[in-house]
Length: 178
Image (tube, rainbow, N blue to C red; front, top):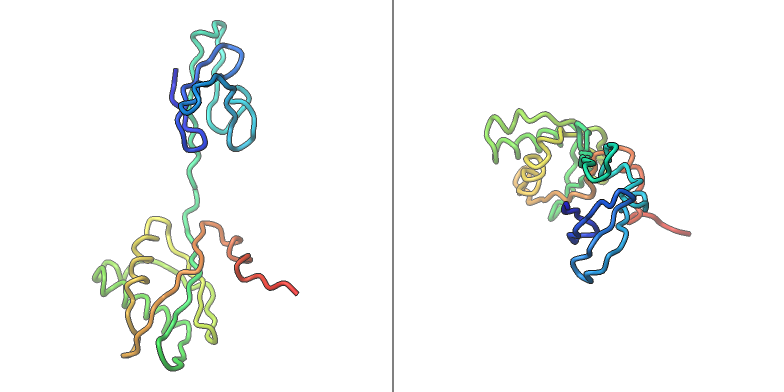
């Protein structure tokens, strides 16, 4: 028997040589469990478990496969919001503002955190940043604690974060239908 997490609940799995059957922890009934990715039984599923067949089905071994995100970078779509007045920034000043926020929170080590401003719109003060996945939390926390620029109070709104750049191309929340 092994424990398998399905649909945010734990169920006991048993291999009977033919397929997977499970005793649900809520209902207690014996049901064939389905994979949440491909809607197939665990016997046929390649997402969660791989079966190593042997001649004797009772001695079959199972290996759990876990696929992690292999992306090196995360992309952030952010916008800078000022409390009063119109402030004009270019991409270089915007990046320097983020570096100074990193320096204020993490010191010189934080200021050396590698990130890129891929796109900056001066009229809306919004930008797309690329950062290493391992440094995402540090950059996000520095952006959250950013309090001002040249004596003017401001804040950063994180609009979207994703490991895939293509996901930033369209946002259903900003979609305008005719």
